[in-house]
Image (cartoon, rainbow, N blue to C red; front, top):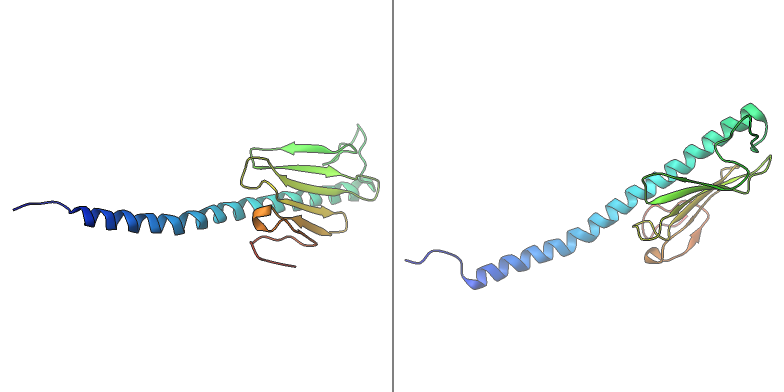
Length: 145
């Protein structure tokens, strides 16, 4: 009496596993990407809150050497162990823009989220998500303002 699996049984098992992987892997990648996008917008909002706190204390967004602000008059890139960078630009006594931009070679490449001192939000999607620019923060593929 022979024991074991036939070749057709093994081929069916491999085919089922391949189908499951083909469905699960893109969903997992999308899940990871959306987590990074939430992190990007959280950091942009946190920087905006710090800038507003600085403005309340100093009545200006522009920094001096005596009182450093969360963002300086020169655009500064804050780097963290994340797949994006945070940049403050357009800083004057009454205005600024905070931008989180995805790093080249990571899942967030091509994505960008901005906010201004008045709370105006903007986002640019990667070409995989259509490459469009929106006047709000898009967090899922296919969403709109």
